[in-house]
Length: 257
Image (tube, rainbow, N blue to C red; front, side):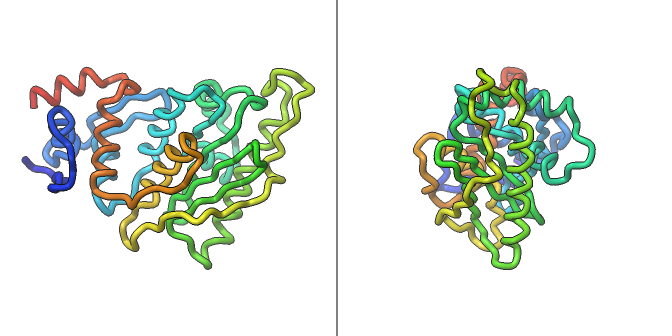
């Protein structure tokens, strides 16, 4: 088949998952075909092909991933899309309709939240901000730290924290007006030791994905090295899991193909 991403011997992927991978990474099919439909993004074959080895993951993939996690969340953890950090760091006119949709679908009452996850894009690099409300920390895991770029990344991180803190200063975010406000811009910055990505791998977006999974489940940033399987597995799950409103339609197309 005309593919750009072939399973290697160590990739344990079979049956429908294998057929789906062949359909997703096919070079002859329409790259603008919509494969995943979500309220916050429309993910095409072209976007999913950013999960091919050594390619930088595009923001639509991370937005979709945040929606996947939020669907299973009890709203004590908030998984924010990349759109949020873009609004927070660029400011300008704030798109109220976009923020309203993020709040209704991905957030909840501020007095109940424990952790807030927000991927940030800065100078062609993804890193993660975790606002730990219980510990009052701004946690900054980075798979490719840089002495030169660190000040800029920390400025972006603080901008997100300040923007969020200003949002959460309103009474309607809380069950009771007496609930203490989340003053996240005052939190201490923590930089945990994490697995480093290989130079030239463009795996920073994939590490953000893994940290969002691991920390809310196990309170740990210990993740294994990103592999080709990690990337292919994520692409297949994004297409075949229940969060995809086009799932059955795509499965039918996969089988026919």
